[in-house]
Image (cartoon, rainbow, N blue to C red; front, side, top):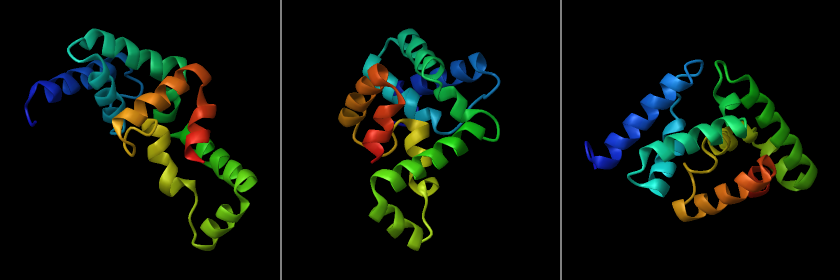
Length: 142
């Protein structure tokens, strides 16, 4: 709801993250991360903020958002190689059409699938991600 409680909490959380992580500021994909955490923690914005920081810092997600996105380019290239290795027929078909993981994976990596999957599934993916790390993102991506 525009101007509602959830949107207000989202704006406060995004502003707090931008201030705390002043080297990256605000990046559009962060709204999916923040909204998912608000959905999990409801009215407990302090916990949502602490969990957002932990997710971004402990799992190096913040490195994907750095200016000019240098780490994101590496992750996209790595995922292309993984697709090539595990799904060679898919890789060839994608290449034939001029498609690499930049077209579909960037949003997955920046939002940990929160932009593309239903929230119930996103939460399950995140639970696994928190335990096993980036390997889970690759597994879900494949």
